[in-house]
Length: 130
Image (cartoon, rainbow, N blue to C red; front, side):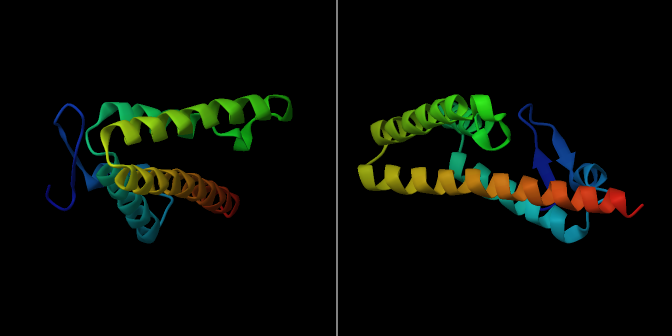
């Protein structure tokens, strides 16, 4: 893939210009961070749609912003998806490889969360300065 180009699921090219428009409030460093994070995650996930779906479920069922009354239930659901991901990886890879991929994926999920919290703070700061 050429630098400055992304390819969508349908095979269409998406220019970095479009990504820049999405982040017009952000500086170039933030955009580069985002692109690097997504590229790293894409490299980890590969093309295995089961892994992609399981990681999406782990991200979706994060208890961080869940109301107090539902937090333990959402956390329990997330734990089940984390366990399913671990077992799926172990069924398709050596244990050592599965362990390494699993830990890298969970770290990537953490990085996504930290990144989005950082972006949210920057956006709030950028809009409050206007």
